[in-house]
Length: 102
Image 1 (spheres, rainbow, N blue to C red):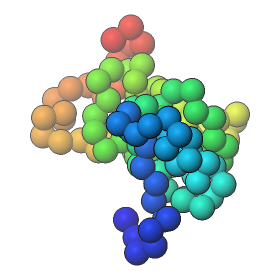
Image 2 (spheres, rainbow, N blue to C red):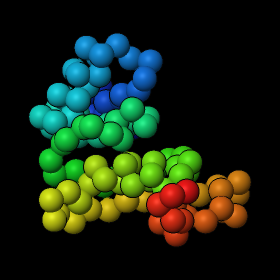
Image 3 (cartoon, helix red, strand yellow):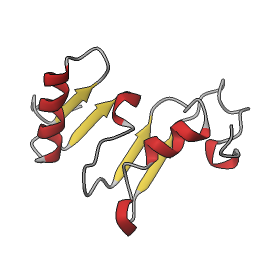
Image 4 (cartoon, helix red, strand yellow):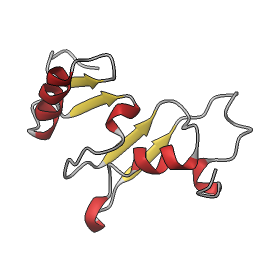
């Protein structure tokens, strides 16, 4: 995702907590303007001014979808969320079309 080593940071459940904290700090301070994350970053992380969320894989349910896209457009700000679809997921209703109890 770029030629500079600090341009993109990654956070996932296989990282130690101190590594996750470091990555999150790099992202929050803008040293790594792009963060690639698993669902480990979809809850409990408050980072201001996130403008875009890209769902590479299809969320399992509407609750996961809401938590993922909830990283953008916070506190009245506008944000963009994009979800990629595959042939396997195209027959499933989009998370925004499902009832919250799904």
